[in-house]
Amino acid sequence: MAKAASKNAKVKDAKAAAESKVWTKVIKAVRSPKTGAYTFKEAIVHKDKVQEYMAK
Image 1 (cartoon, rainbow, N blue to C red):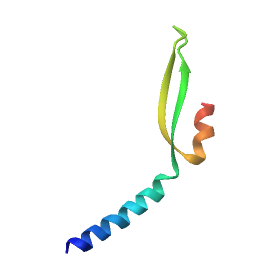
Image 2 (cartoon, rainbow, N blue to C red; image 1 turned 60 degrees about the horizontal axis):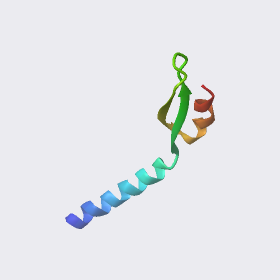
Image 3 (cartoon, rainbow, N blue to C red; image 1 turned 45 degrees about the horizontal axis):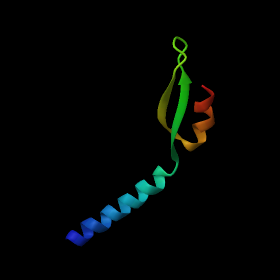
């Protein structure tokens, strides 16, 4: 029984790994209008939407 459970876990992990390749972590530097200091905004974005996120 344990072998069947581990086999199913490997299949789920492979699907999750394949799906995770379409997501990208984006770090954007944003300048504060008051102080002029930079802060960093992080987001997990679909790889097709990266340019759209950076344009905001």
